[in-house]
Image 1: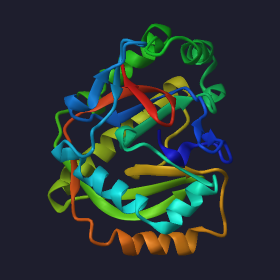
Image 2 (image 1 turned 90 degrees about the vertical axis):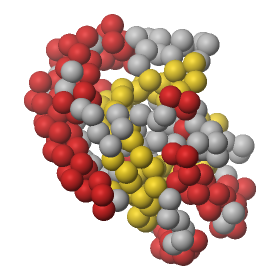
Image 3 (image 1 turned 180 degrees about the vertical axis):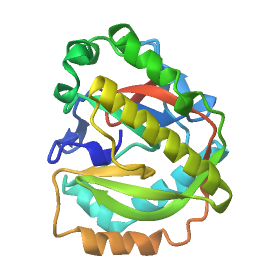
Length: 257
């Protein structure tokens, strides 16, 4: 899910220890390696569940997690019930956020009812509820294209309540990244015109590290400055070669459909 599209002040978790609050939705994500997609016996779908320490493509994810978890400020915020880390097995990079429970009412009347039904049905049944929409997306150049793109750590930012590590394409991936952005924008415009899907924000690749309990105004400057210093030496990157459609039940559980 693209955190720039999150409804402001919409909580993603509560309690101490934290519990993820349910929110259903659909997004296009960069596919993780096959070994990161583990069959879920309850849904029958493949769940995103990466062993960040066990695969080469997880090196950036592991580096970010290890750096953040050793920071005393983050540990203190977690202990006080102010901040919740996303489990690293659920780390991902969103290509295009489609719709979720917070914005489904903005879809065109032609598909709004089916979209609501899909979000309230069994995970993975979205294909049955929205065949025209799903077929268009899966058949688009954005999803069908063969690509090889690599991103590296850039800096930390706050998107509403989300703390994210923003990424930048490596020098060798600039051309591919530009083509990807153009294909994404074309699909986003078509989805908006045909189906009323909210027009997506500009592509800003990032990994969500965690969520604050609410929007904070006194923490960002010192916190982000400290994180920049701690993460300055991170040099690893993450590579992707395909894009897939994922359904999610909360901000820590994503399933490929």
